[in-house]
Length: 393
Ligand SMILES: *Cc1c(COP(=O)(O)O)cnc(C)c1O
Ligand SMILES: [Zn+2]
Image 1: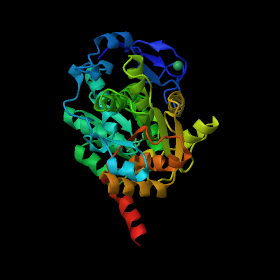
Image 2: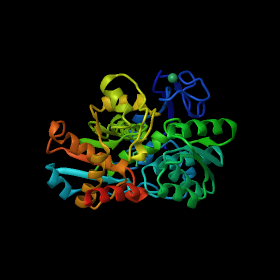
Image 3: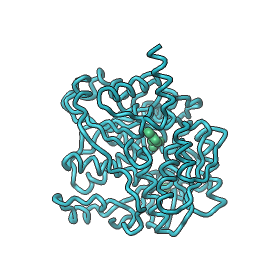
Image 4: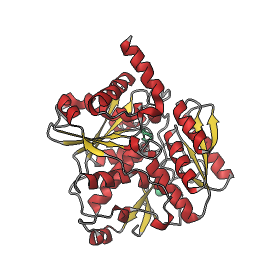
């Protein structure tokens, strides 16, 4: 932990740590904010202080953390494998494809990282109820960390969430509100519930520590990669919080003088759920009215963090790319067959994105590429079964 304050991504106004909790009150004055969110808060550290304290022999990435260690939940999240996918690289014609496998985190997705930090914050604030809307994984992550801490997780998920995710939620003992509607409906309902009840809301990007939690994936990659940044990272994008967290992690390292350059971030979206891609390419924001994709974790009408995600992708000198459901499911199989890694459909979009841009020349053969695998394939075997039945006839 290092001293920090918040800065509004939209207007730049600065706030002390405990002066604000969710969004910038100037940019999002309504109790139920407009989505995509305006006024998402960023943690700003004393980078000079971190640079002075940094010891490359005993690197301590907790210097970039927003909550004191004494409040950490007593459970381990993240700390997932990072390794070269040799065969995959050979087959696709790239020298250095690496996998960061967050499917192997506590509840099976990268969302654990955000839930861990928000629950740490709830410990600090002495709040024992935490509320979230989710397509499934954020809820599982929150429910798991809350179970370990003896806190109550109040969950709003769409009824269409895959059965494995709903089963995890029941098993962890969360208070489950199954919403007969979309993820966007669940998002609104959860905010309404938060206004009427006590507790902390963990909604993605709405709580600034979701981005700070997710950034730990970049800090880990940096350490596991010999304290170097890779050249390119492929990230599946729904609400645009994971990709913003990935950026923030490398940004912090850059500001502290520990890396020379922030990797290019390639955001991969499903064709049916592509609001961030279109905003990035055209500058025009339009919701994805029918985000009907098998990659349920990246299915969203109005992505919560569209503005910040697009800004960060641009600042990283990155790009966005669309993939079809068929390409996602083919990539899932290709990843499993050639790297032994089974990612859920949304997670496999990373590889689908790399395959899609392969011929475009935006990635060169010698670059170090990281595929961020954001969730475990066993979370949705239904999608895999359908695909295998289809190709095997
Ligand atoms: C949540 C999630 C994503 C997308 O993250 P956003 O922050 O919504 O962009 C991608 N893959 C998996 C497995 C997820 O659970
Ligand atoms: Zn603001």
